[in-house]
Each structure stands twice: as structure tokens, then as C-alpha cells.
Length: 515
Ligand code: HXC
Image (cartoon, rainbow, N blue to C red):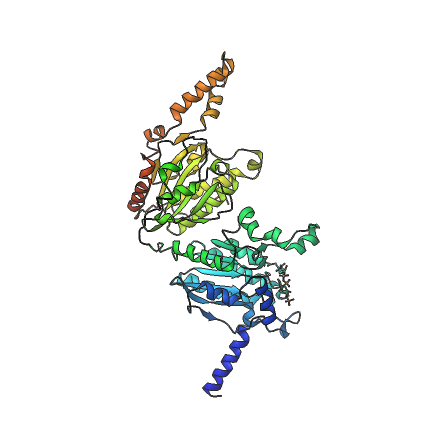
């Protein structure tokens, strides 16, 4: 065969492999708003930048008549390309080929591209659309998942790992994403569960739809398994590009700096955000936007545990991670879910050299039987651990309430914040004035002629003494009491001079956080 014939043969082989599960199967996916695996990669990455490998890999299974089946590319597309000009490794499972199920060779393709990503120190993006372990391949498909989970774990904190859920994903197909840094889902298309509705019905007799069990909204609002919610695959890809603009490409790099921009002060006026009545809520995202470059804030896990806000923004062109109590939701208290949400984000920022800016306004940890029994001690401790362990620059601003454990947990100077600022309306105390006065003056109040009058007097006494930032400032726990209008200037300066921060923690293999 001459070169011409060989080329014709190659092209034919490629055409066959590129067909995936065939036109009918592709049409079925399109009807529910899904792109094909290759279309997804090509749409996400920079034009003409995708290079595919292992197109001719075939499965090696024999049982259950598998030896008679041709599964193009073994149901997964892998390769490298550019995302906004930067190199990435990527894979996308093809649901049209055996439901994107994972057999041994399918897993080998994925682990090969994961190994490249770790070696080349570039992010790995996994587009998951899979029924999980390929049932016909038995223990080999389980082995395949084990190999993936191992790589997810050792890559954690070294390269960014991004998971996109774009189909019904079961079993191992959701555990790998759970080990990665960011999980993106699309309404009506993404489903995640360990066992689907059929198994649940068989084992427990309970009936539930796929959407209600593990749809995109469920994972963004209720379980916290997903970080970004989109209405379409295209919107989801735009969100990934936006995230990629904020994060460094590996743990030895810093995020790419952007030209400095002022906040949009016409929309976000820092002096007017805080209500004059200290009991009134406000949207802490307005504070973030009032001090961030171009007021551009990418919120992470926007729909989950909304009493805390986390996300990325830039200050003077450089990425920062914001962690902020949200007074609009449950007065910004810390609870099981918000502690988990913030702790993981703090660890991400610390692993990837992203400075942390913490905005504080909370009455403390949420009391109650539900929270105690849900393990608020253990989960709340994750936040203490994550902040204490983080060695990136840590800047804290106490805006209003900082009571009790909440004061300590929200990156106080005791957990080694580098700089703590407070607004003049800050109240730093063991608890709110009403609660405090009722406890410490109880006997006096009860035996007074006019208990209500004395109670009010004692509340005021406590407020005058402690409901301000000056006691903490007198001990040096607060570095400066500042006007709200000075906030951006003070934080950007603190970040600038912390640029070369270097901290040596005691040598150890690793800590034992309260997972
Ligand atoms: C082999 C599979 C498969 C699997 C789907 N298919 N899942 N083949 N192994 N795990 C095949 C189907 O047989 C079908 O083939 C095609 O993919 C499309 O599947 P449908 O069921 O027609 O699609 P849909 O109705 O959309 O349902 C999708 C689904 C469902 C929800 C994912 O297929 C399902 O429940 N699959 C099994 C999920 C599961 O229990 N997986 C094992 C998890 S255990 P044809 O030829 O008809 O087109 C696991 C172990 C790791 O992953 C655990 C780690 C901790």
C-alpha cells in the first residue's frame, strides 16, 4: 500500500471512530439539549486548539458478548488544548457509546491524560457523562475507577481539577468529581447519584425521579456537591472560562495578573451599604463589589449555604479569595454547611497561592438541637483548622458583629490573620448585648423593683463597654479602626506588602483535620 492508500485507510478508520455511537444515538442526545463529547471539548477550548489522542483505543472485554461489540474510542475522548490561551488536559465521556460507561481501556485513556496533566502541571478538565462502572467488565471497571480516584487525590492541591457533569452520572462517575476542586452542572442535563432511582425502588421501595434525586439544582442548593449552576452547556463553558481567568495553573504559580481597574462606585457605594439600624441586613456581595476591580466577583457555590459567601475577585489586578458572612441569610451565622463550604474554599486558595480576604459580620455559630446533632462542633472546627493552617496572606475586615466563636473563626488575629481592620460600627464581644446582660446581671435584674428598666440599663452598659472595636484595638487584636471609605486602600496595601509572605509551619507529614 502506498502513502495515498495508507492515508485513505487512516481517514476511513478515523471516520468510523469519530462516529461515536452513531447518528441515531447522537440525535437522541441532541433532543435533550446535549452536545456530543467532541463538540463539548471544541466549544469549550480555544478554536482549533484541541488535539485528540488514543482515538483508536478499543476495549478488551470478552464476557457478555462484549468481544462482538465495537465501542469507538471506548466511549471517551481525550486530548490537550488551550483554554483562553493556556494549556489544559481534557477528557469527555461519550454517552452514545455504551452510556459512557467506564471499562478498563476507557479508564486507561483517562488516567493517561490525568498523568500528563500532573507531569505538565496544567489543569485537568473532566466532562462526565457516564453510567459509571461498565457492568460487563466487572472488577476491571472498578479497578479503573480506583486508578482515577488515586490520581484525583494525589493531584489535589497541585493542579486545578475541574469536573463538568453533563448527563446522568452514577457510581464512580460522581466520586471522581467529588474529589476534584470545582463541579459544574447544567439544569435538566446533569444528574448525579451513587445509585439511581431504579436501585432505590428495588432496595427501599422508594420512588423518586432522576431530577429530584440528583438534578443540578439539588446538588447546588441541597447537597453542596456542585459549585456552579448553568442553564445551558454554553453558559456552563463560559463559567469555566471565567473561573480559569482567576486561578493559577498549578501550585507553583500565581494567578495571572490583570490590568488594575477601579470598582464601579456609581453602583456600589461602600458608605451607604451598611444600614444605620444594626439589626437590619444588607447584601455582603455589595461590599465585595464595592472594593473589587471592576466590581467583578465570581461567586462559588452561590446557591448552597447562602449564609456565607465565597468567591474570587481581583484587587489591583491580582486574584483574591473572598470569604464573607452574609447578613441577609440567617444573619450570617456559621453552621454545619457554611463551615464546610468556607473551609474547603480556604484550603483551595491556600494550596494555590491565592490571598484570602475575610469580611466579618455574624452573631456566632447557629444554636439548636439540629445543628448540634448534625455535628456543628466537628464541621465548625474545619473552619478553625483551615484558617489556622493557611499561610497565604490573610486580611480580615470586621464590619459589624463579631461575636463569640464567630469572632475567632472568621480569621481573627489569633488564627494568624496578617492584618485585621474594623469599621467604627464593629461590635466585638463574647455575645450580643441583650444575651450578655441577661446572663451576667440576671440576679440583679430579677430582684430589681423595675426589672425591665434595669435590664435596658444593663444592656446599654454592656453595649457602651464592649459593643465597639476599641477594646479589641486596645489589645492589638485589631490593627486599625478604619472608615468604610478607606477599606479598598487599606486592603490593597496590606495585600501588596504581604506579597512575599513566608511562614514555616512545624515539619509534619500532614495534619489531621476534622474531615
Ligand atoms: C454498562 C451501561 C451502564 C453501565 C448505562 N449503560 N450504564 N452499560 N454499564 N454502568 C448503557 C445502557 O445499557 C444503554 O445501552 C446505554 O448505556 C444508555 O443507558 P440508558 O439506561 O438507556 O440511559 P438512561 O435511561 O438515560 O439512564 C442512564 C443511567 C442508567 C441513569 C446512567 O443507564 C443507569 O442507571 N445505569 C446504571 C448506573 C449504575 O448503577 N452504574 C454502576 C455504578 S457502580 P444500550 O446498548 O441499550 O444503548 C460504580 C462503581 C464505582 O460505578 C463505585 C465507586 C465508589
